Length: 174
Image (tube, rainbow, N blue to C red):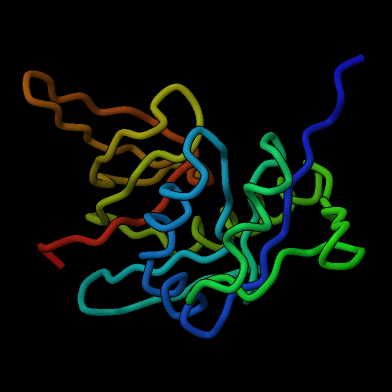
């Protein structure tokens, strides 16, 4: 039987929260946890000079539990991370983790909030599915799906993508 994936929970400092809201915390986390998945429950974007901040759990972020415990505890006390959820003393720390299902529930809630904010003309990034990582611009909607145009160097393609799989990106055009 495969063990269920779990996630380590980090509490942010006020500086860390500001970076999460600005969308710059991701760079820090990637530098500390190469090859580990993480989830920051914040999304901020600007479209047509309107800024929006969506979040489902202020003050925290999650990193999959796949590394040695010391990798998680070593980042506590920097300008971004206030603490990691744990029990024990300084000598013997046991990390507290949350099950995959709880993180997926938060991701789904945030995706639902984002889907309600999407607008035609908006630049988006695909966060789930076969097109994950690609960016495009929303052309139109059909129910729970958006038609987006994806432009690569040698290819332009229109694809239909579920709204919940899209995340707004900063757009120089507005």
